[in-house]
Image (tube, rainbow, N blue to C red):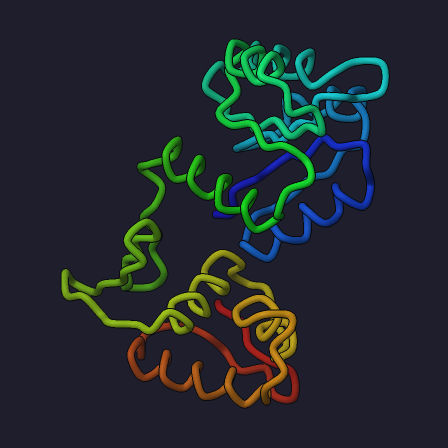
Length: 217
């Protein structure tokens, strides 16, 4: 099950940049550019909100009150160009879980999101795919109580498909999401890693789409 994140940020380039990094991490991301657009989706399913403080004629402070009015435990991260202690204090008083100042590294924001998601949704770190039990927080996998050792890339490749069951990925997409968009090696590394993963997890239902890539389920 994908975790859903809502971003409310009126700077389109920044909004899209953060969205792309979070999607690469496996999240489903919905982008909004105004208070009103976000307000219209307050009751939609969502696991975490990322709010800019300055929003058209209202603010992220107004929006967090609406979010917390529906679910007081819903996690919220503020991001702002204003690095003021006053803003941080107000954000904490209104129930925010974190505050990040612009400009920031999107990778740092992803790490903060991951940490909050894991802390808030502790009981959901375990996933099942076929006979295999996955513990995301420990980055481990087992079958019938016996641990199966995977390399970092094997585990990340597995999680890409588990988080997106039923979706087909080309070798180029897998390279970008699991390795890095700046990876310049051969896409044969995808096939080699998949071969090892299948050998270790013979009951894993990852299908080959000839001439394209792979799909789970």
